Amino acid sequence: MNNKGQVLIMFVILIPLILLFVMYVVDIGLIYTEKNKLDSITYETISFSLNNINDNNLNDKISNIINLNDKDIKIEVLKINKNEINITLKKEVKAIFGNIIGKNKYEILSNYKGNINNKKIIKEF
Image 1 (spheres, rainbow, N blue to C red):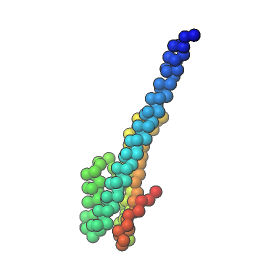
Image 2: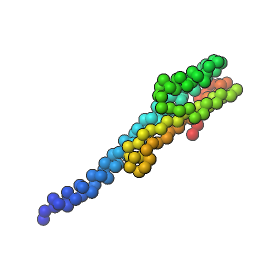
Image 3: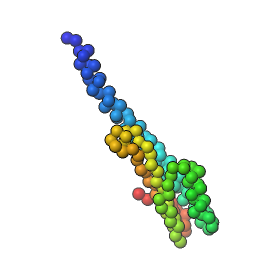
Image 4: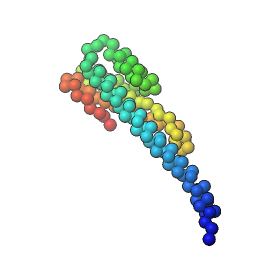
């Protein structure tokens, strides 16, 4: 019996599903990479802030540090109190798979809090 037609039909049916799965995996990888990058920038910004807490232009310097690393990052929260500094950064990542399901961008957030007294940095979820 000849199975060539059946294999061709299965290939035609499965190739779009395989391509969708590959696009999904690429999206997850891009989001994970950007999340790690955003966490790193937030951590370094908090660390810089804790070491230069008495600087007069600290808010401007924080904005410059963030913009030098990535211009697409937006500062959601920047609070400097007597005891702590809280920074939340947001970035939108373009999606490949998301275009198919109607979500063009993924929004990722990174939130860290630094204690001024003991210079401890805590990741907030």
